[in-house]
Image (spheres, each protein chain N blue to C red):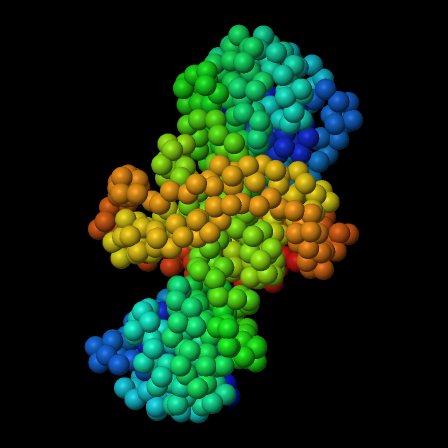
Length: 313
Length: 313
């Protein structure tokens, strides 16, 4: 029987994590300080689990739901757990007291991973006696559909805490990566930011519309990237592999980088222009429906990827 | 009956274009100056068409093949065609005499699109009398699996040539974008280069392994990007849309850009390190098999995307 896991903070991200662990059979104890959040978390999860069942991404919705309990007692939530995933509000002020409490309440050897997307673990775990087991475990939303998890140590995080968390993430079907040091934006948002900065600059300079820049990814670059990363992509795109590719195209890409060596912030006029283009493409009243579409597309893609990984070798 | 189209230059890219047009029912006349290229092009195409049939991406392989003929006579190839796609070797020296010949041989109103991935049309069409109908139509390889096409005018390209090419590309199932001016790398390679430059910098700085950087895309960023672009992605990732997102995350991404404002070229040591990591992941003798895997995954993804676009709205 998989070991119990605690989910601390039951907003959208915490609820998503509960599904990840429960789907793999772990008893999940959800804690949140706010009564209204606790009151609605199971209903939200049940809706998501029903969607997963509809797409055949889980076998038994009731079995998943039966793994999950909610409590208003942090000590009870973490009692005897093998791992704690923290997803409280993303400010140092919100996280620091939670880690002070977990420092004494959580079993000494259970790693504590934070869902923080930007604040490094060193900013809120320094004063903890057991800070060696505290780290960032940054998911993509929703984590039960996008499996990547960034594991980022603080300078004092024990390698064993990273290793245990890594193995747990693999066991529950996630795809963990090891970020070797604290760096702004970690890896995922740095890669996304690099592409976004170029996209915004192209829009600012009138090189292409936001719709055409989007299409360049959704009908071009994004196809290969949905099943292999940028290094493997270029490794296969030159006859002799990645060094061959670098020799051919490295100078072009360096020139592109040099052309953006004086980066401008996304200014008000540019933001207004991009916002206008997006609102023409999709009215503000349709954002929620489109998010639901996106999640259903992600589910269908997850089904496709699982089948393709089996059939195409 | 769709109008005839000429494909000039019958390497991998030209052969891929022949499939795109023939799949849509256009008679395709392939020209290449080299006898050995002409001799093997139909065999290569037949293999690709059989793969498409195997994945149910076409109905009738024989019907596709019957659209395609090969000639050693450029004048005969372009006689009466509605469009010319040029894919000869990518140097100004190779392209200039081809355009000089097409200038007089191709029907006056047929646009001539070049597959050039880097050289702008102004570099090899300036001296042509009919240069107003000459443009870049840059595909992704293979174009029958990755539909994006970048349409890039020279300063003297007529808007009508862009419009006609745009409509033809849509009609044959491609996804054209309008790049409004000549810019190094056009849009696709600038976006790819921005992400690659960050990926190489992260590898250089020891932040993560190339395998983990790849996973960040293939199990993270690339999933949404396979069906929606970066602007739509962030538009849905903040409650009120893209301006809301820019207010929250713009400063982080600007800071990431500033941290790379002194770009370094991919140097020999770094290239050797990345090459070593890739060769450990995939031996040089396995590159071809992996390329075949990639193309089969692209075919399966094309099937998936077509179904998902139908079923999920």
